[in-house]
Amino acid sequence: MAHESERNGRWATLEIRKAVLPVAGLGTRFLPATKSQPKEMLPIVDKPLVQYGVEEVAASGIPLAIFVTGRGKNAIEDHFDVSFELEHMLAGRGKERLLNQVRSISRLVEINYVRQKNPLGLGHALLMAKAMIGAEPFAVLLADDIIDAPVPCLKQMMEVFRRFGGSVVAIQNVDRKAVSSYGIIKGTPVADADLRDRLFRITDMVEKPEPREAPSNLAIIGRYILTPSIFKELASTPRGAGGEIQLTDALRRLLKKEPVYGFIFEGKRYDAGDKLGFLEATVEIALKQPEIGKPFRKYLKGLKI
Ligand code: UTP
Image (cartoon, rainbow, N blue to C red; front, side):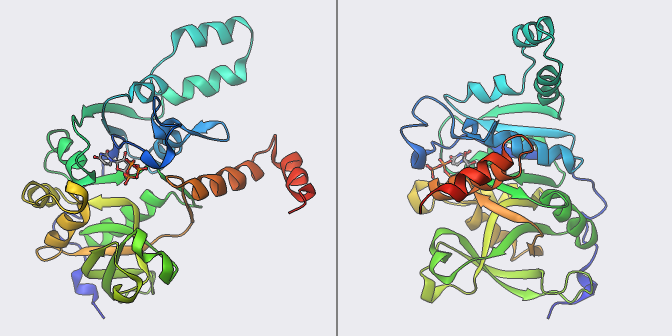
């Protein structure tokens, strides 16, 4: 068991002020829907995937989101921009509620954009944000993972970071059969009264292992708090699986030099980057909507399945 003396690494006093949202992937699992529109703009009920992510960034108190975008992703920039014509039209028709909703999107957080010219992997996408991040710790959010939580997932992780001062990756227990879809950690539980059985000092990680070779059932999901040391590791990480620069490979190098923690967050995560997960998110989020929740429940109950 790792002990409390690990606390307050050298980065702990720095605040997390920036969140990187890589959105430059090709979204092949959703073709043909993603042929001419970004995957991140697919709606879960009435909000695009990426808006759930930006709302989590804002609710975690992070003032700046940095989007790593690519070709064909302009709709994302437009979504978070002011839409003068639409606002003017809604104001003219007295649609105050809709107007406020539309306006609030462009006011959630400050947004900067950087381009990834070739989708060479998540690790490569993060490297594109290096100049904008500089020498401070930062958050990463993959908009595919929607997390419904009493306290926003990133906020929970920022608290862990503040106390322990090393990089933190969000993890969750998955079925043994499912491990081959994830990065899987090997870790030592950290002795901590508040985080009993939920915090691990990571000693190794494996990308998409076969079930019998997996060191645990603890899978890395799309939320990270990273120290800027990750950039040095990313820059020297060779292309791995699929010719891409993998974040997992860089994290494996980092954990040999600095503590990296795996944190089992509180909340429910939907893998909206996958068709089944996307449908699960749609159904469960729709059931919670004040306007359609009740009739939708009635409709589902009436299905003869
Ligand atoms: P995924 O592995 O989900 O890839 O990327 P993808 O291209 O989005 O989707 P599929 O698998 O082809 O259906 C995880 C995250 O990393 C971003 C994606 O946009 C997504 O948010 N990403 C991935 C980049 O920004 N650049 C890349 O080169 C690869």
